[in-house]
Image (tube, rainbow, N blue to C red; front, top):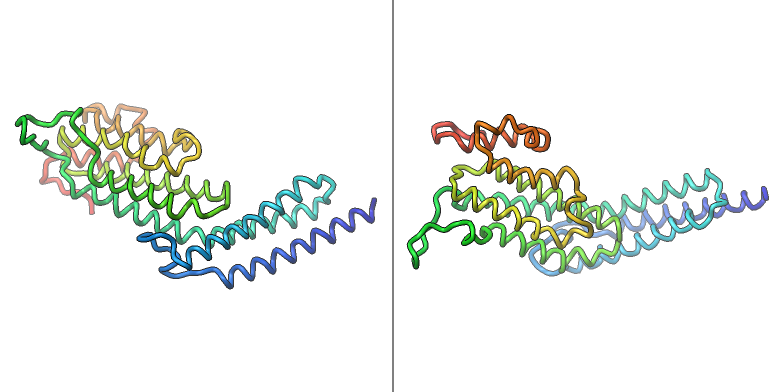
Length: 275
């Protein structure tokens, strides 16, 4: 039995050495620079090479996890060493994915910031019927259509090409959380915000859930606090000013700075917005 334990330790050590060599080689051949993170077209050659590299790393990661789970007799020392190697492989995947994910988030921020170029104050007048547009007439805002198109395209053209299971899903959830939190923050900054704008913003809130749906393997509600922020935004913009600070739901979910930004949006134009 002692010989078996020694053999298992030796095997585990050799696996760790192989993973270290593999990891070092991956760092040498991974592609960096603008061509590896671009989002304007389908994947470039650099991106395809990085996608293949992620697939190879994840295969080794999965097989190493399998060794641990399928070999209960592994000494604890060997298990610890192998788990260190698992973390190394996850970091290798992260080195490839993180710059790309950051570029996606930057693009999402740019799209969401453009909401401030749209009219959330007075209602447009229908040229046919000459009546103010009501909630049933409202379609999602231009920036929201752009967001939905962008997320759908990035998911189909890029993200599905990275075959790394739960690691990719975690990254997608990061994108979704970032998108929702940035959206909520920008909504709180919208100024001026009239009655029409409030209706339009409320209509957009349902659309943002559709926008991020391609990235969600699970229900959006499983994001927890981030999802509650989106739901609470509707309550925030539709609550009378005098009742805002007495709403415990709003105070518990939304950051105080977001609430303050929204309160400022209700003040006269002479009250300057924070820079």
